Image (cartoon, rainbow, N blue to C red; front, side, top):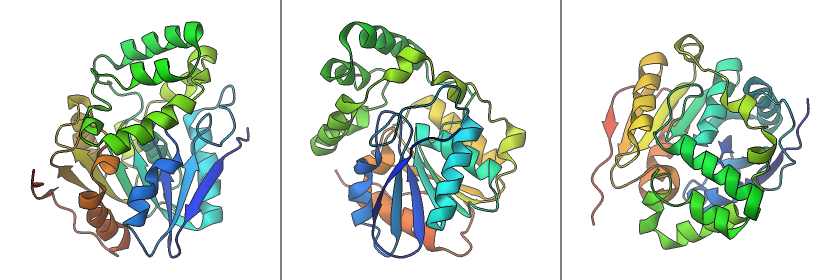
Length: 273
């Protein structure tokens, strides 16, 4: 099963593959890419997102990871950065292609098949109903970005970022909520045995204001993945990589460049208010 995956590329140097969150696209990485010179940044739009083709019927998470692995090999990218839903894909890529993924960064980590934050399933149900009656557009974006659940709450401090995200979400078709094609992706279970097969040097980044379920996922990953360390980013919510580009860029840069990262718990310094 082949999917039409589109990419956005910037910079020169060692290749880094970037995987965005649900309803987003690779255009939102720009602020971070500007702060990470010396790399060739390759942002992939997931199926049904951005400029990529629609999500095919029956596409499973391992099949999607295999498609993205082919893209990464073609780009020469052994470094992977993922955010939120994109971390599910990044994890599967690292599980199934350990020879490929050498450096892995997971922002707001999500493990497929593990308990989600309370309220998220209900929000998806509400979105599905609204999509059937109103179609895609501003009403869907308004509902999706409202709290709780607090997926986008951290962006309220950053109006420009929130506006950028909103413009991308408005363009999202939400077809996967109507045709059920998201289900084979989210039903795949990434159990501890699978996670333990990851050999990549792994960095978990999570905002200190993120929801409890994602802090639990971060702890699970750092227990299951042999070469894993975590960074807690003060003053950041679920979309930590996008919310705090000035603070997070040096952390990412160090992990992407280090030949042998030091694996220990690290807490970023407090951010002046």
